[in-house]
Image (cartoon, rainbow over the protein chains, first blue to last red):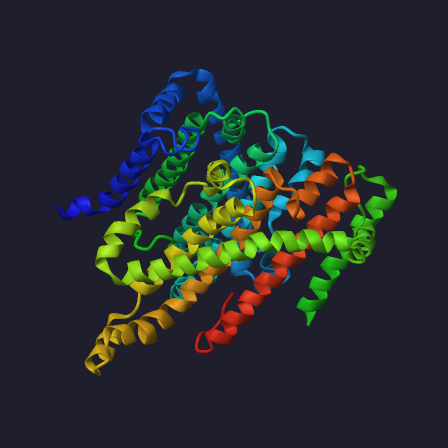
Length: 252
Length: 248
């Protein structure tokens, strides 16, 4: 019985929605019924052109994320292990942290064109920050005793880096990835909503403009599902790679 | 000392390189650094910029406030009470990786295309990071402190105010910092998608009119705004959390 408690609120919300949709007090444009949303949702998966839109968004998000992951881990490691690099780059990263990089998008459009490249570049920029900051935090916090022991036992610098620093930082790297992955999806959807002719974000705006609220909501569910699946995939990967440390809190 | 020199040198090098490249001729959409500053100070003299900044702040500040207050209150409550935890957490953790901006069209249908839908979408986006941090902050309160306070005869409410909240505050501030950055991103996106005022609107107008000077003015304003509010938040944090050592 107690396992059902989490579903009470979700069930109540869904039931409330259906009642509002069926009551006739609001236009179905504002509250389409769950049946219509479900129909559009099924439509989405049965048509290849719609699935292709999802693929477009996904490859933009993952492309930018992969670039940010490789660059961010290297920069973060350098900042965490070298005081000089940290002193040099820290003002840059903490100073521009709260600046919405999205504002650069119009300039990126002129520089990289209106297609995928400007979006990938923006995803890269937005994802870079959390990955660098959290990786740096992790690399800096490596247990000194472990480093000393390794040194005392005659490990070379490269070996210490490979066998001590990297394994100790990997949980933090994954924590950074976990913050950055939803950001990648957010940025892709946003940029597609602002200016694009394909991708899920564009489809949402298109459905809104054609007053197909049920289709729009089905797309929202698809995007939500995508975000959830990406996060799950990352967690599964993390648990395989970082088998020595359990995921306890949400972040680290 | 040598670090400060290296920093200043790097900054000077980048600015000079940029300026030199600009003099040699860059594409029209890239302005030189001094050119940007010139346009920015010129814009500071006109009222148009202030109107747009005001319109943007009228959206982001209430949105951030609603999201932050609700997020920290509910997060603390869910971290303390098992019933609330059971009810709220699954839904929130399930919907956390979902990009909240996709709700904007829906909010526009429900609440109109005015400021309310934008404020609510910003509040929604800010809610999540604050909630999750407040939740873990409250959960990770050292048990021994709670037991000691209870043993010393403190009422549960007093334990909450004097033990749980202070021990959760560092994490809450970490969440607020994420929320603040997010509030500007969402504000900017919402204004770019649909608005008749604000910095996001300004950059769109500049883009379609090929007014690159205006584009950089808007970009610089939002950067300064983001930086200032982040500094303000960090200052509040150091003031409030005097007992905590700062590392980042």
